[in-house]
Amino acid sequence: MKNRLKVLRAERDWNQADLADRLEVSRQSVNAIETGKYDPSLPLAFRIARLFDLPIEHIFSDV
Image (cartoon, rainbow, N blue to C red; front, side, top):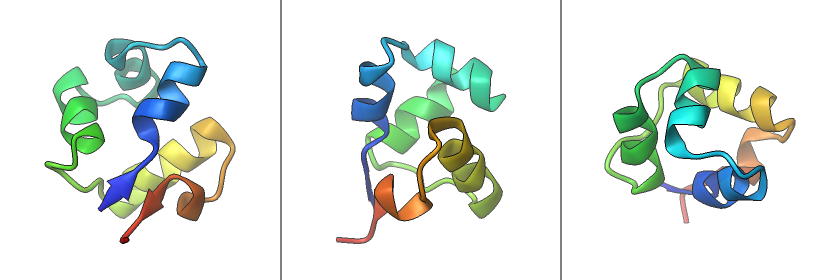
């Protein structure tokens, strides 16, 4: 699954640890999601969408 997490994070000048703290996950989890090695659970995807105030579809895509 493709995602815009790295771009959205960079726009806010957050590093992976900053985002991980806000999502209450490890920095390694953020890295794995950004690089496409791991797809987030639905609850985590919703937390990410709420954090960035965007619909899930604007962050994640299956294309």
